[in-house]
Image (cartoon, rainbow, N blue to C red; front, side):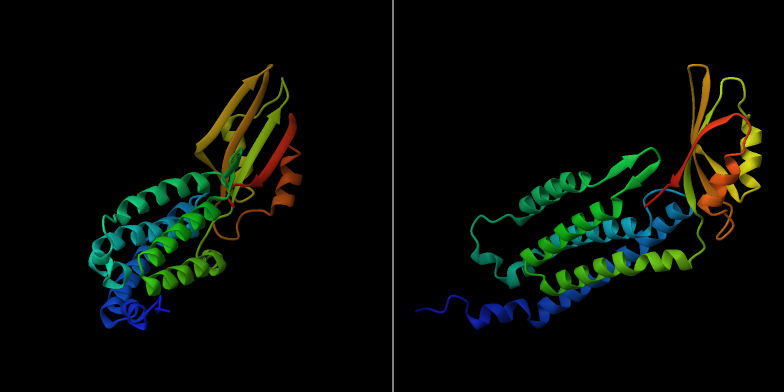
Length: 250
């Protein structure tokens, strides 16, 4: 019986040239991860839902899917010439599009609270890992998997170590006759270590009642009052009928 998987074919995937290209791809992935983390930290610091892990994973996976197209002569261990009519770039395009819809399905939004962004980004990163393995860049695929797993497991520790600000979503419901103005709300929150992110503010008036919805961001790391204490104190506001506080990002 003929050998269905000659040793020479396996060696082709781990030849000096293939390993060198995998290392070049790895350096691209590492650089993209660091740049994505930088952008993600800025967003996280300002109370946005998508943080360092989400930005890092998306930036790194995008690089993986882009850089792989630059080395077609090294696909499949350099044996791509044996495939007639093959066009992996079309397959990659279909994979990225399909997985994008899958990732969107795990993102949940409730008010200002958004969850599932990192999970969606990790699904997309997993598709990039599959593409790298599929075209024969095994070492790069392994390294991307390790970087992705490390980002999800330990990047939150880096976020906690860096200067950061707690973000909470706030919903105030006031009675018909009594409702504080903008300056009063700002003062009440600042005295408890928070400021209003005015770009998120919504003011709703219905049935002669006023409702405020916004994201409040701590003035600095460790300055914001704990959620339970904050709720207890804000509940004393004159005219307040309902109060809802939740973390603004997950």
